Amino acid sequence: MTHMRVIPLAAGECLNISALTQRGAAWRVQTYPAGFALLLHPSRGPVLFDTGYSERVVLSMRRWPGVLYGLLTPVRLDVRETAAAQLARLGFASDEVKEVIVSHLHADHVGGLRDFGAARFHLDAGAYAPLRDLRGVAAIRKAFMPELLPGDFEARIEPLDFRPAPPGLSPFPLAADVFGDGSAYAVKVPGHAAGMIALIVRTTPDAVLDGDGAGLMLLAADAAWSVRGLRQGLEVHPLARVVFDDAQAERRSAEGLREWLFNHPRAGVFVSHDLPEVRHG
Ligand SMILES: [Zn+2]
Image (cartoon, rainbow, N blue to C red):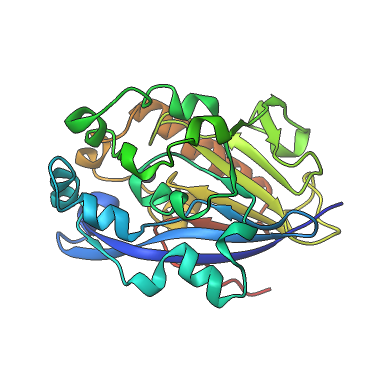
């Protein structure tokens, strides 16, 4: 079976209040990395799962209406940290990236898309439809900055093809085999944003979906603020729920991922706004 190496990275960070991201935590400001991942596919080359921030997000936040976004979640970015800059240091030119898997269209996930002019965008068709025509404050309210998308974004979308999922992906009824080779399956985890997806990646040749999770990596995007929160089902503050696209769906999606992890105890997890998990054994 085809497998991919997963390299968790981050491009910038945002500030938020701990008590909002985890119920019962202190009311203090904490920094959260804007995570993305580089996946190394044996024949498709470097594949990105999201991109983190870019200078364009920072510029947009200096202008109306992006200022509103910056007030809610201030951003810190060193230009050497953008996805394109980090890939260059790892030896990959931006136009070598032919595939970007987009978890959802919030600005901290698509900030760097315009740097990858040769890429196709794999996403749930349901992620873009509700945002497409939004501009100004209406877009910002959905954490969407249309100017971050390349002009030909729509033409480069490769909608994920969801079909009945293999049993090893239960409780998710549907999954999209992104490259048709079993290296990565997308599952639907809407709620935080419409059409959000998580990715289950095979990282070793012998990894199987219906085993104990060894060799599998779950890239959970924004389904939780922390790995611990996801694994243990910790709640966010009720105030944090008001920004969710659909709070009930969000809870169901997180429960689905937690159940999958419970059934695959050896699978690794990467959530976008937490440090990569270090696991032993
Ligand atoms: Zn998000």
